[in-house]
Image (cartoon, rainbow, N blue to C red; front, side):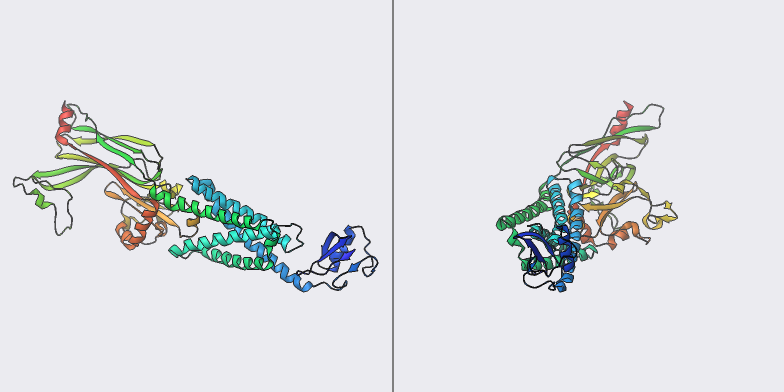
Length: 486
């Protein structure tokens, strides 16, 4: 039996007839190896006829490196565990819930990276241990390179906004750890055990490029070039009445179809019917009144020469499909409402408008609880969601919105969508990092909007593809009355 000299880690290999039968860090471990081989516990280790010592006798066991080795193993395990958790969190959400194939592919790649991190855990113990597995160092190197690439990407994405979030400390810590681990592995020259180091490097490079291309395509290119198209209609039907009735029923038919390739969320929708009032202007100078009152600060975007004292009144208003609902590609939705008007109405025309604010599903995901309406005038558990003396009477919809790429989600502060609907006012929508639900001040909607950063609101609307679509129609009230009488 031959006990070889200590290696750089202080481990002494044990051979019998040039065949390795074990290794030991200390005399105690040597006894364990001998016991496993069937030797007695009281075997004389100084018997040169049975044991030959190379590079030092039975007293040479460099245990001074044992603590360092254990510290290195512990640091490697902590870093790899943190990286495993990070890759799993990023990948799971995208692999399971992403809308596009490219985004799901990125999620799967991150889950595969998490699997590699998991395999690297026992490999790290083995490499800084007895090295029973030949390529354990290469597996650890692959896990460290993946961590370095991912954390570098995350820090780059974070630097685009530079919003302070707690997780950026984790990114920075893992990035520094990966640099330290890479330096250590380079010093150990772990690639010497890889049979085809060039193929290994090429595989790592191709995987990184594939991830970067998929991320860029799904997050930037596809949302920018993929168009959307909607068909909207708001039309009046044939009115109904009878001789004894003082009013007429005017059907209002509403229709919407997603005729494009992008499914959307309906953030808020609204249909409104206005009654148009005006007096006949004999002078033909009605167009001069378009500016309205200078003291009131209002103006009109249309004018007629023979109309004076123009005013529009809301006759009917309501929601169409409902906030938080979806309209998939090719899906259509329609409804019909009955508008009641007195026969002696003074309205000249009726104008109907159907409009809704949409959010592209290829850019973001809306919280499922967003569709639950909160009543501004009703207190819950003794507390108003939005004080009515500040926000008025509105149905309020509020919820978290997430990017379709989880890489961006974990590098940004949470974003929220708030929508306000009332039959008396135009619906309002905004996306920002401001959590309206936690607002403790009694502010009006106007104060909330003007108090937020307009650039941030506009930027977030562009990122999520938040936009408005609408359709309208106008009919003569005299014509409706004539149809009803016939």
